[in-house]
Image (cartoon, rainbow, N blue to C red):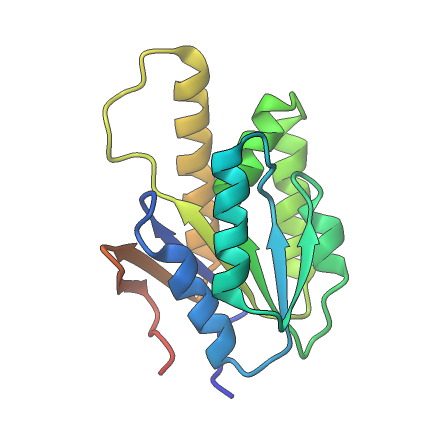
Length: 176
């Protein structure tokens, strides 16, 4: 069983391979796996993506679907589990578009991460490398995502960026 830090953050662009890499970290841990899914299915494309992710993971994961209340899902984890939160970007989208209190929900999430007895691997998108968005909602989201990523990275023992399917450790050492 490899030793994951209490918190690992896997970031990257869309379709970069970050989810696959995060899943591999969890599998290598040899712990019972809990998958916290924040996606909501609004169209056929997202439904297909969910089916693809399920097939990629296999059947030995306990899945908890929760678009916003990730804190409650983390409370169900045992110390011998490993938790994959996929993904912080969709969680943030759900919070903002659902007009939830962003500050309160973020504080609740961070508190739950800190008190979770199991190691957590969080997948998140890097959204700050593109152009400045032309509308206020997009700028609000980009800024909130950047701040969330920075906060998570500061707390994480392992931060990995994935580009073209290739992981690069920004902080810590990737378990072998």
